[in-house]
Length: 201
Image (cartoon, rainbow, N blue to C red; front, side, top):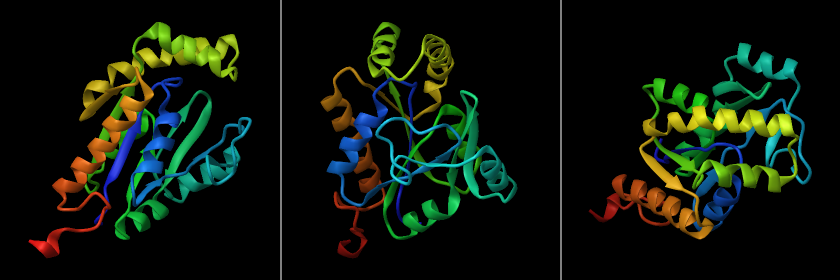
């Protein structure tokens, strides 16, 4: 596998989705891994672009078939990453962003056959995180309380990640993550465009 697996985790409301959309728009040969989930789609989300929306029965069948690279149950729903498409993209020399929670990241760490770069995106502070969750307008009070409580646990896991990026200013966070991806490519003797530089050595 010549591509890099890029793990990105963050508490809900941190701005991860906005950051990653810009990163993917700026970095060549970078793909976003579309996860499977049993949660209902939100307004504006599209099947196959944002998630693959499946039933609990279908998801559990995929678990039994050992089809996932990682999976977890979060906020009463399942989320998981199918292994086959990730492996294919990495073999083709693409870097792949894996947008997963701290549980999924820990599963990846336990797989000694996988090489990865892991990044944790943090909010500036808890007050700002709550404000962002409320601004989304997609959560009720109980859901907001649950996500805030979970964010405390998630932040405690941030020390396990190689990189920490604080999303205080969107443009700066995007620049930081692009820089991490480029640094990983240079470490693997690849250029900005993801192509190998080994032949020139």
